[in-house]
Length: 172
Image 1 (spheres, helix red, strand yellow):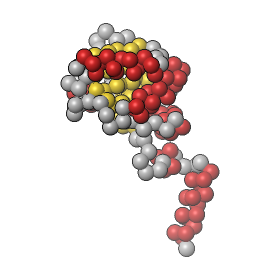
Image 2 (image 1 turned 135 degrees about the vertical axis):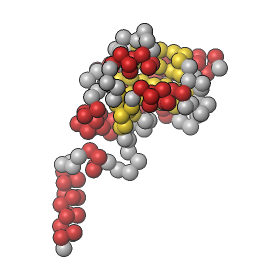
Image 3 (image 1 turned 120 degrees about the vertical axis):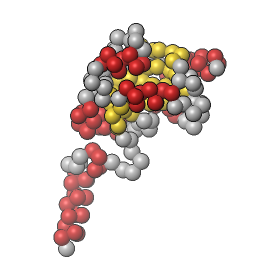
């Protein structure tokens, strides 16, 4: 009887949206992991023969929000193909549940997303490009060997992303 009441209460809270995001999540939904400098390095270098389109963004950045659907379209265009897509949020790691997951869930994002857990912003920026100011959105395209081949600063369109990816693929 107690178990039935608990299950009933759980489903009532679920239907009303009162449970934390991870308890509302369905199997296979997006997970946001923290990433440090060594994790960024592994993400870039462990390419398995594919390019990497790496988008740096934040939930408080309007241009990031506006370009995010195109990042997802890139992932869909190159699914199981020649490029992987990933994103790193520069929001705070303690904002995963309150800001990042709701944002990603509402937009049905299907690519890996991380949140930077690097203590010094300079270390994070330098792990990608020592000349990068840290402004967002920023998108880096790495070839299948982990070499940076393109850097796109500011909001870009789907056509610009595809053109840059095509250029990197052609150069290989």
